[in-house]
Length: 246
Image 1 (cartoon, rainbow, N blue to C red):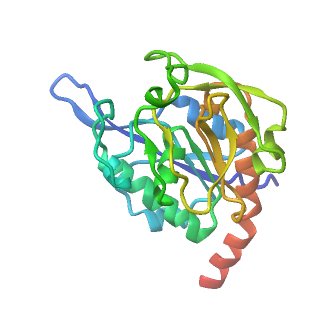
Image 2 (cartoon, rainbow, N blue to C red):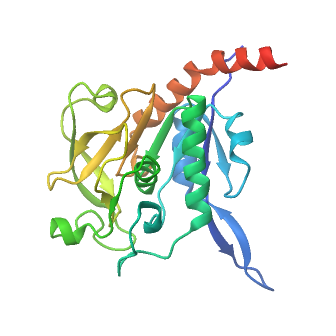
């Protein structure tokens, strides 16, 4: 019998679905995320915002935080800059609650683009609200609908290096914000040539990794496979808890 594939939850965007009569609220997510989770060996579970997170998280084996709009600057004690997008408080709240639940339950977590920014804010860190003002170029998001491409090198000895190696590799990015002050427990494990923080992890946790680029956009599925493996490794413990409570 094949082993059960772990369930990995990913929070969806909130949107509006056009219909002949009216726009209707929708749950949406770029399909690349779902496919990448599946390609990595897990079963993706799309999570709408506003659900009871503690109850949901008990049924998951891992978490992915996707890209999307800017985190509300009020979450890290700042006022919104001119180029910061309108806040989406329900999604912010859902993802921050899910990060907390993942920490309590020991769920492996992979945070992507906006996701790594949410993770950093949830840990008490802050964000640069418009990266080009700091680095002097728009290479991380050259234009709407296009990815920027640049090299990243993982820090030797990090979990990221254990997955992707220490040789420089090219990533695809689409972000105008980035990590400023680092959140509690997180360490920087990769940077761009201009000094932008490109990846963080928590070395005290079995698997908490955030990357500023978009691994779902390419063909390399090693990050998603590592997440699925970490999620599968914790399944026996979860099953034991379920049997004790049953």
